[in-house]
Structures are given as structure tokens and as C-alpha cells.
Image (cartoon, rainbow, N blue to C red; front, side, top):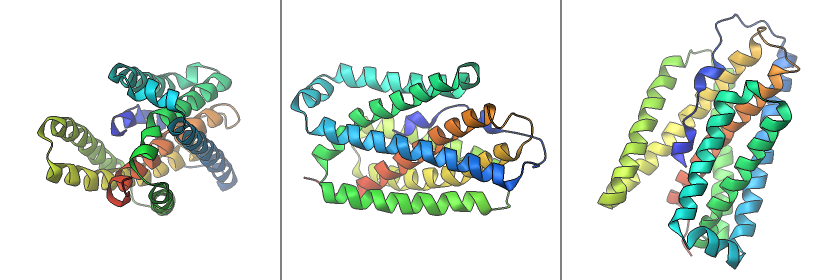
Amino acid sequence: MDDLKIFDRNSFQTSEPQTNDMSVITRLFKTTYMWMALALAITGICAYLGSHNAAIIKFLFGNAFVIIILAVSELVLVGVLSFRIFKMSYRTATLLFMAYAILNGFTMSSIFLVYTKSSIASTFFISAAMFAVTSIMGFITQMDLSKIGNILLMALIGLIIASIVNIFLHSSRLDWICTIVGVLIFSGLTVYDTQKLKDVYSSPEYDVEQEGRKFALLGALSLYLDFINIFLYLLRIFGKRN
């Protein structure tokens, strides 16, 4: 799932001083977390239902070509939302986000076949706690994380390359290193993304009622991807196989 994190983070950048009222910032963050939670719920439901339907499992994992098509479709949806969200209606953007959550849920249905339900549940709560802590850190910190964000993005590219290489090497040591690094990278990106969202929500440059809702939706996508990747990497550490 880490390759799905690549999208235009420059959409969040602003050079204006922070002038919006804190109530506006709080409202936009509530909207962001609401959409993120809804997307996670949809993904979880689809993953669970997909894992308990033999026909779906056969369709998804009986042919590698299907998985490739789904992966490419997810990348396209993320790309369209990231680069074109302000040129489409809010309803269209919302539908695309929900479509992505559904597709991602079905592609993740395999985790219920590989890991026990109890370990999936416990890992989810660990991930939620880690995400909450890192997101709060991003909200309250006064440190400029722009440079750290760039470093994390470069590290993410390195992680993707290492993961692809390990498909052929089958190195358990490299796999373990990638897992630990993955948790650290996406935890750091959660801090970075949250601060960047706060900067955007503080900017008076856009209409809160119109563009603000789209920024909240785009922010929800960003944080959703952070959470999903934290969860998947932690599952490789704490998950107990069936």
C-alpha cells in the first residue's frame, strides 16, 4: 500500500500568515477526521465481507491480472483526487473518495485470510493509538516540518524501491527492516500532513465553505493513507497468522 501515498502534497502549501479563527480550523479538522473515519469503516467492512465470500476471493486472487488492474485503478483514483479535486464538484470528489475506499477494502480482504481476527483487531487499535498521538503532535508542534517532510518523501521512495527489490531477493532481514522503516516513515508523515493541513486551514486565501470542504476531503485522503500504511506495517509485526 505504500506506493499509494504518492500524490501532490504541494496542494497543501500556503505562504500566507495564519489568520483564520481557531473555530474554523477546528471545524475543518472535524470534517477531515469524519471523512477519514467513514472511509476506514467502508474499507474495513468491504475487506471483511470480501474475505467471507468465496466468489469474491476467487475473482480477486485467482488471477494476478485482476489485482494489477485494481492496484492501477486505485493509483488512478488517488492521482485524480490529488491533482484534479479543485476542478470537479464536491459531490464527484466525494464519490471518487468512497470508490477508492471500497476498492481498497476488497484488495485488503486477504488480510482476513492470512491473519487471525483477534490480531487484526488488536493491531487496528494499536495503529489508531499511534495515529492519534502523531496527529496531535503535528497539530500542536510549532516546529517547521517542511524539510523533514521532504526527507520522509525521499525515504518513502527508497522504501518502495527496497520493497520491490525484495520481491526477487526474498530476504527476511530486508523485509523486517522495511517493515520497521515503514512504520517510522508513515508515523512521521502523519505528523507532517497534520501540520500542513493546519497551515492550509489557517490560510484566508480560500473560501471556507467551498474550497475548505475540498481541502478537508483531500486531507482525509492523505491521513487515511497514512493510517492504512501504519496499520499494514504494524500487522506484519503484531499479526498472528492463521
